[in-house]
Image (cartoon, rainbow, N blue to C red; front, side, top):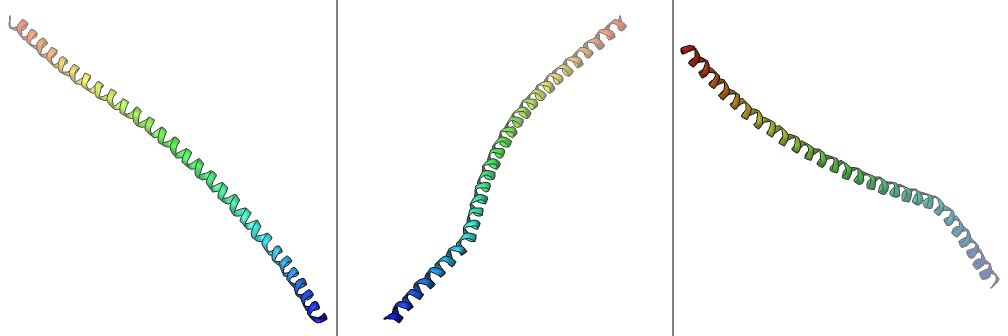
Length: 106
């Protein structure tokens, strides 16, 4: 019975040593796990910022598109006015030419 008890005690001590040795092996893994958690948190933050930046860029692009559309409209109006003025000037020149021709022929 003494040998069985001594063997049991040795087994318990060996198991305790192995358990403690196993605990020390978990510390580097816990450190790595904490590092991974920190990296994931940073990536989530970076992703959120990237989404925010993309939304701001989209808003700016829409504003620029609106301004470009307004500028195009203004340009089209100016072209229309210019064409009307050109037509009116041509008509006025024709009238003046006819007036000079009439005054010269008299």
